[in-house]
Amino acid sequence: MKKHIYLSFVLGSALLASCSSDPAAIADNTKPVQVTLSSTGTTDALGYVTASGKLVAKNSVNVSTRMMGYITMLRADVGDFVSAGQSLVSINNTDIQAKGGQASAQIAQAQAAFNSASKDYQRFQNLYNSQSASQKELDDMRARYEMTKATLDGARMMKREVNSQYRYTNISAPISGVVTAKFASQGDLANPGMPILTIESSGNLLAQVLVSEQDITLIKAGMPVKVLMKSTNKEVAGQVSDVSLSATNTGGQYAVKISVPQSKEYLPGMYVNVQFPFKRSGSVNQDFQESVTVPKSAIVENGQLTGIYTVSSSNTALLRWVKTGKVMGDQVEILSGLTAKEPYIVSANGKLFNGAKVTTK
Image (cartoon, rainbow, N blue to C red; front, top):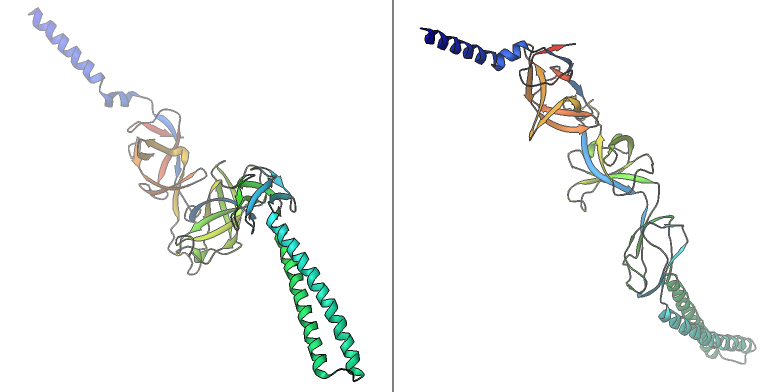
């Protein structure tokens, strides 16, 4: 009998222990987590069209030459600041010097022939006036005079052409700015039209993005936009300065340039995101719907899944899986999984989990 009583006591104790370890029982005895609720907001900021691009210099020039020859001097390196008119590149000009000598010799020869023909023409004019020369002789002298004058003019033009070629053997900086690329070195053979250096004006930067054909007609010069600098994660105000109306050379997309505030933190080549605001009045952009947005702090990530905590009818935390969209600043667009004006948990004074009891502040 005693054994049966002892066995019943052990089984009863085990049953009580198993009941006390039930998660539901623990949840009932835990203190509710104090949370702060918020409602989803609707905004037109994330409903705007967003385009990605990068910063480019307002003025960018490729320095090249029209002459073929070996580079004898190159006074610039990447990162150097150069001033407009500063001598940068010299190219071997031995051939040009030889042509210049030939042109000078031709000018001297043509000048001597012209001087002789001019004197003969003047002499025959006097003889004709005194009726000592015929009209034919005067016409022949006039023709000789005009031919020598044309030869002299041609020699002078050739000399002028040679002098203009000299400018392409000594190249100066066309603008003031920073050397951002160097395609040749001293001793290399320069080819006509091939860039030697690239100079970009310092300080003046533009954000350049590509926009689809569905949106390009809605973008106008002077339109205010928001520009997110990816390197610093800062948002600055910009203004559309140039809108391309052709996509022939840009793969079916249209280039748009935006003026941005100047800062030492920004350099050409940095990536940006640009938001274009479209008015909803009239027939413009009527199809856009206001976007549901929540702060980044309210988002919960679990592997590939993204969720947000809401409160159930029984005052427990309910993890709702959502689909997110665009991100701008500290706001995240919710595409599905959460409706407008639906409460969600912004912050909690304890650890949240699915089914945890909560109480609102």
